[in-house]
Image (cartoon, rainbow, N blue to C red):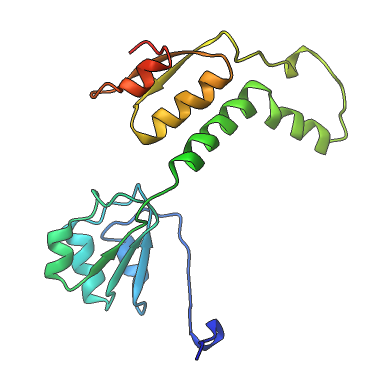
Length: 174
C-alpha cells in the first residue's frame, strides 16, 4: 500500500540565524533541525539540541565538516546529508551566473520591471570567446566547467593542488 504525505504531521520554522548555543534553543519541541553549509554544529550546540529532544540533523549540503560528528554520536544525534550534487548542474549554474553578470541581465531585468526600455552602453556585455577565464579547482565540477568554457572559445587558466590531465588536454594553463 502507498502512504500519503498528508498522513505526516510536519511543522517547520525558518530562521536566518546560524546555529549557535543561543539559536539551538529555537529547536525546542522539534525532532530535527536542517542546517546549511555555513552552520557550525559544535559540541555545545549539539548538546543543547540533544537536551531539547532533537534526534536528527539534516544537512542541506554534501559536506558535514562543520558538524562535530563524534559529539553528535555521543548525544544520540543522527546526521544526514546530500550524498552528491550533479557536477554538471553546478558547472552549468556557474556559467549561468557568469553570463548573467557579463550580459548585465540583473540590471536589464530591473529596468524592464520599471518599464524602462532604454538601450545604452551600460547594458553591453562582452564576448567570452578569446577571454582568459581563471578556474580554481579542477575536480569533477572544475573539469566540466573547463569543457563548457572551452566551448565558448575561452582561454583557460586553472589551479588545483592536483593537476588534471583532462584539463591540460583542453589547452588550459595550469
